[in-house]
Length: 517
Image (tube, rainbow, N blue to C red):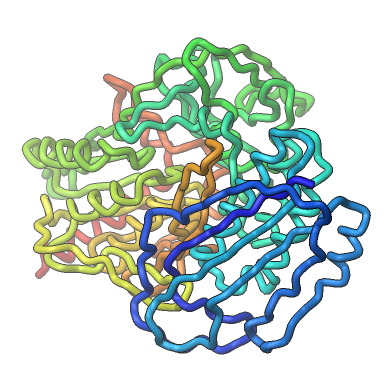
């Protein structure tokens, strides 16, 4: 029978063992290459070897894998894993590990390609996943089990499903694989352009519904009459139940000129009987030019008749242009006599983390810590500014809610913990993960959570979120969305937003403190 052997070689730091107390280690070693090197060779064997025992590093004993052997008995062969280089947890230098994996070639050629991808994905996760216990399971044996399950499959889709099932056991929904076709549709450019339908969607945490947060003015979704608050229920006839906002967005994106059919529940047009009208529209995918920033100036008069100006800045996402646009907007509003600011990060799902850090430096001085990272060994590494100079020292309020995630939470934490801003709104989403994205040899892509973020004050972000100083609503996602400012729109459109009013009151208090000092 034809067998394939995959040799996976990379320079690794010593791996902490499940169930053992982790010692303080020096700064983790950096992989010798940007990704593990996968070498594959084929050989024909008359009889497949039996499952090789895997050495349990925590006990020094050998496990024969009885259940695995039974499962493989009816198949042509079982996976064979040879591991070397394990040792006790100690502050030793990184060392090379050599792993050789032999497995039977699936009858379907496309499944065989995915078998190689399985080994590559397994190795990358073994080297870099944030949880060194792999959710308290034997990750090495997981490879064997998945390889055996994959052998009789007949389609690549089914094989990718097996990899996805293996990754789901890690307990981290953000560590995932997408097929080559899905990866090709995942085409958000770092310049802020996207090929899609021009709609922002996010999952409502309390109900799991996918809601439209905003539509790009003049884009396909906007032209089709899709509105903020509409609920997305189907994409091309398939239910979106169980998908998060990013997974649904991937289905909506695609090559320019292609179309996608969506079904929604109208969030604005309920009849008297309480029924919600459904609408189904066909959208053409286009190149969408995203400008993540919208601004206006809110003017009001103080008790002594003085005209006060508050600069309102809404940041919808963190694209490569976000910091530059923010800098230009703040400079312009400073020239116009703005004396305080409201930065609206509600329903901002994140984007480029570097863009979030760059935006933070527009508001901060000195060498403050912007965020901390904590790796799989428990090492905490601060990321600091270098001789920062803020564009303004005017009072600042940041609006957040449960739709504020990732880079939004990093920015909010940086401004809050350094005493630069008051947070108003509701607890944020709680996505404080650092991810690597690797294109694998077959064109698929692997997303791995490799570390987590902590706020400058070392507060957890992941699954905890950022807690605001002032609550303005118990469930902001069920209220009207943060305003989408169009050209020539009036600042009066913000007057119906209760959180804006709370923010203005907080700014008045801060300005009073400033004048008294």
